Length: 214
Ligand SMILES: Nc1ncnc2c1ncn2[C@@H]1O[C@H](COP(=O)(O)OP(=O)(O)O)[C@@H](O)[C@H]1O
Ligand SMILES: [Mg+2]
Image 1 (cartoon, protein in one colour):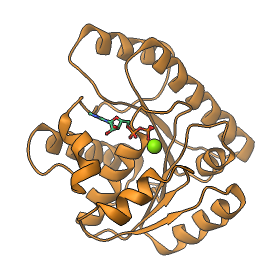
Image 2 (cartoon, helix red, strand yellow):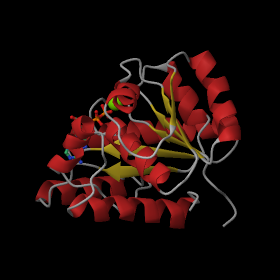
Image 3 (cartoon, rainbow, N blue to C red):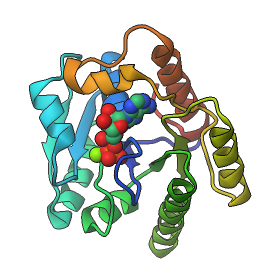
């Protein structure tokens, strides 16, 4: 594979599609595999860093909360020199730190829910990523990740909308499962049940298609 991911940014213009949840799952899973992970929390609400400091009980990784875009840009570069994988959790934008984190990324994951408005927001985020990549005159692979999926007509519709808009997406999806919500209190990523296989499928696809280490 000719490329490898060091900086993985989770971004969406909208609040609530699961950015922080996915950042938790990825950081904890990769740390559990023995990867050197640095997580950067660029959301001023600091949900990720509070979780890491107060609830998280898995394999250790380093966490920095930094919502200031100037400092974040330097911090990402430094973290990329030290870690195998840097996971950046962002706020919904209108937020410059999110744009910095997207511009610095080797891969941008755009979580989305299945509603029509959600998919429209995901498209906006992908178009921003494309624009930032053009401005930087390099490729920044970007993929939509359908989250809180229920096996309904709505999800099928969302998948069609994403494809009709030509948005790159992961085949893997995450279901609407209590286990993901519980993580924020238990401090542990799911160890049993269907979430385990879903998380493994996301990681496998990120490795096969996007050069995630491992
Ligand atoms: N796949 C899922 N199944 C069930 N609940 C989820 C899932 N993904 C996220 N959640 C819950 O949805 C809420 C919003 O998720 P969060 O990760 O905070 O979104 P964001 O960071 O994008 O604002 C949280 O309460 C979280 O626990
Ligand atoms: Mg969040």
